[in-house]
Length: 440
Image 1: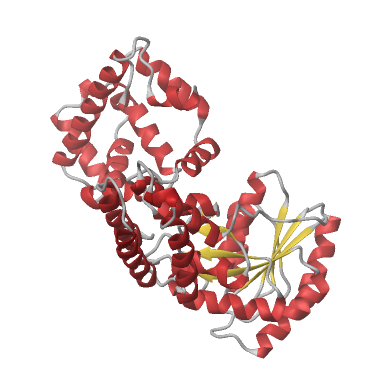
Image 2 (image 1 turned 45 degrees about the vertical axis):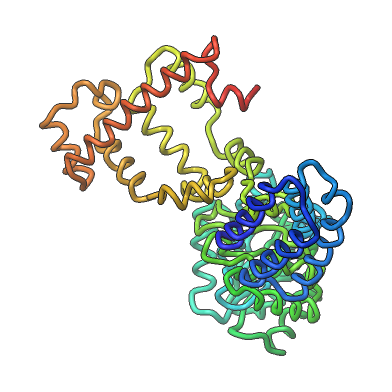
């Protein structure tokens, strides 16, 4: 996500930081490169023009030219203006009614059905009682797909093959009231392209459901086309916000940077993976920092607090301090890390993480292989690694579909991890570990 744009901006800022004082010519040259980078990232040309104008107005003033750290000042200005372009602040859901009604709209293939499930899971974790509603009676297996997702999340799914989409919405809301569900998520039908029949149907659903939120689900990989789609939907049915999907793919970022500025509608969530947990709130300021290669540590911490087992973390700390770190702990920590998503996503949220990903070529398959090897061991072997001899290694390799050298590699890395933990504990008096520092 944004890799190319981040690389170009980082190169510009590196040159600026090397200068003790900036001239108007330095600013002009840098802005030209920033403009090219934004256009190559498929940002709407009007957005680029306005953004560059605002940056120029601030960058050529005394605030920068007379500054002792002009490079840093320019970075701050670009960060502020990028965030302002995407919205002044995070905009959440407004669910004023009981049940609150969320209507998801968009073209076919944008990921509406999966997004409906992701949104339902997020609301469920927040203590709400959502219900999913299948109003897409046209796409083959659309209802079945939502049923499968609902069952996996242990959430009810309302559907009917005998009713029209607007009738389904009406009945679903009444059903939700009777069954004490406080949020209804309507998964509407999409088309390959916008047409009057589609919009007419959406207007009918809107009229009977009176939704609190009408959210466009748009594919971030379509770039500026996502902006055009958002504008058209807004003209027909008046959107309240946007959910961008596939932002973890090869998207150049143009849609994320353009939609708010062009349509006036806030991006409320972004999809960053296929798992139902891969939906993140959209924070303009944090996204601006990620684009500039500053990472997004706050989101990473929030995800860790939400998904990781704090009791396990405390128990692990105790064992580390007692020099009792085992392969069982090693396995549990790898499994805990997986809860945060692919390692590349974690690195993307760390300052400079994009550079790290590019230089080390993070291999998710390597982690999966290590997990398979650890799971193929017996509990006794994980608790007492010293008993793992040649015959046991062969058995573990067969059980995990790997080779003995792969087993040896995992054991070697485990030994290295133990040594590193001892070094960390040996520093700083009482042996404060990184997790202690975060919690203090």
